[in-house]
Image (cartoon, rainbow, N blue to C red; front, side, top):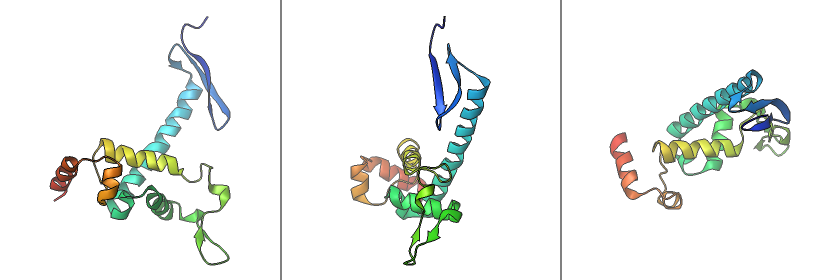
Length: 142
């Protein structure tokens, strides 16, 4: 009998191991270590883009586009009309990070760490960043 959780965790529809009484099997731990490394790398990329470009602080879409342009240029192609695009085969794959992962990490950096706060007052209001937090951030930057 198992006295706690008995579940199969999946990653991309592949079996990665069992969790019994809080102990993760070696196979599952290896998969989780790989995910953590990927997330840490992506967090560094998000911070880099937020630091480099102020307009990315106000829009997750702009942040995502600039991050992909900077760190994943091989996936960007020109369409017949000459516009830059990302082929559908890359969306939802692990070739490039998902928009939701980038957005989550941006929220972590801005809301928890209070770094690279939005510059647009409307965005600050929508994200409920107080005037006091903004003033403290500006004092720390200057």
